[in-house]
Length: 370
Image (cartoon, rainbow, N blue to C red; front, top):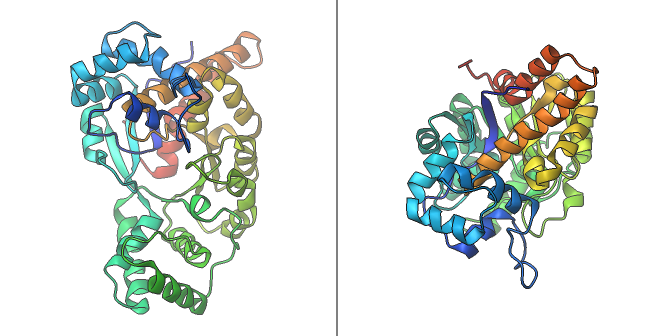
């Protein structure tokens, strides 16, 4: 039996504070550009089936109950009690929370309280720049205020995260842009954005990435499947190879988030470069009953000290539960098989399981041991 009593969720978001009907709940199960196929629901996915397997028992229901029955019980308990039961049943003891999404989502402190866990903030670079732009009148003040804000954020957050792959794609020029290039790009963006406009300029995205690298805090980079409408060929982590090489030896760790369906590429980069780490969480949530296969593929390529668990959960506490349960099940199945076959000793399997579940994240993010 492979034990993982403590999980560090190294990348997630808060959960919704509002009650959800069937349609709105489904919309958070799978981010698509439109409705499901006629006569089906978005519960008819690997993620949906995993929710029905693992979450009902935490709310006092039988596994695999119907979506209607599950959501009725959820409403009966109320959003706060449901979230508390689900989060505390996940086995996650530490949450690293990206606070850069809009919507009525819990803050890190609220998530910690609901889950009887610890929580730390991850700062999203693009949102930070957009907030600075909203209060800066000139290019010079924007750039000065941005530098100050990145420095201040690094003093309190455990990491920075970037959605440059979502906003533009990961095929960015690897070197830091020059001061004149940054000023020109900032001037064009500020002149055309209006209040609240999103940052997608490739020069400013590179400037943000290199500002984060200079801070010394770990930098998380989104790769693979993401927002609806995203061209996933632009988010293949292999496109980061030159940037990864350019940042080697500077003292900042890079964490490749999500990765799927390019999880092998992320694992390869983690195997080649000492400062690169691969996330294995969200890939398991998407693949459900096939999670063990995906985890085994990551373990083929990445050193065991370079793989981190996360849920990638957003909005639904069910996604925290599913990520944690699928990770434990997949880890137990893969490592347990290797132990049974005599390829690994039980003590080695247990040690590696602890590394993936929490040890690696605690080392990378400088978290205290529980």
